[in-house]
Image (cartoon, rainbow, N blue to C red; front, top):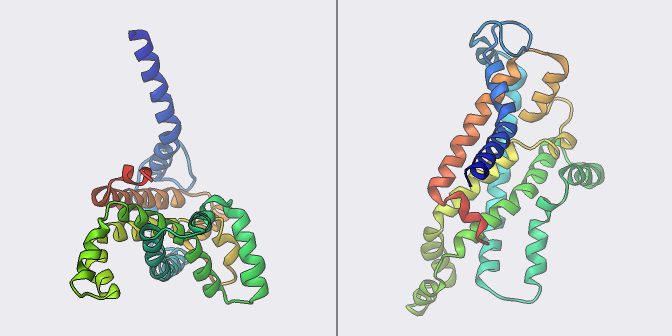
Amino acid sequence: MQEKNRGLALFTLLVFLFLLGPLLIISVTSFEGGNILKFPPEEFSLRWYENIFNVEMFLVAFKTSILVSLAGNLLALLLGVPAAYALSRFDFKGKSVINAFFVSPILIPGIVLGFAFLRYIVGTYQLPIYAALFVGHTVIMLPFIIRVISSSLSNFDFSIEEAAESLGASKLGTFFTVVLPNIKSGILAAVMIAFLESFNNVDISVYMTGPGVSTFPIQMLTYVENYFDPTISAISVLLMFITAFFMFIVERLMGLSYFTKR
């Protein structure tokens, strides 16, 4: 039994190192004091963290990613909340098909979805770059909005809504005064998860960006192609902390295991 436990512990440690090893290496190399990315570092410095804010193309791309993620998130929220409510509240013919349709952007490989957007959104409709990014990122955020809010609604007692209507409240008024306040934590969690998905997206954005317009992850790829300094390692560490902070908030709001119940 002890040998079995030791074997399991060793296997767990190996999996842990396999998953987190690259992140640890990136974190260490971000403190390299020299001009070339090395592991282990020959000297330690914070100069590359400072360099992030001195590279204008990173600042411009960061603003673009924030703008696209927030705008797309807003539209995805306006579409996703009613959709999640309808899918959770009512039983109707074709419900499973509609649900699968909304989830499909998660199931389709991103590189395929990105090419489809390039062909039909950019090629056919000749949308400007910002508009194409807005549409594409809205599509990839919508499934996360619907999924998370549907999970939140699964614990909502719809008899409360019926009681409010029986007392004279309108359906729309009941939705805004009874339903939404009870799922506000789920909505906030959905917004944060969808924002991270949009901000960190590469496979869709690489097809949508163009001259003078680039998202933050795409700009990171461009930088790696031309430079071999630890700036990207420093950016990666900051993004890891931001993502961890967002997921900590989601965990506090709903619990990450909450999304595996449905």
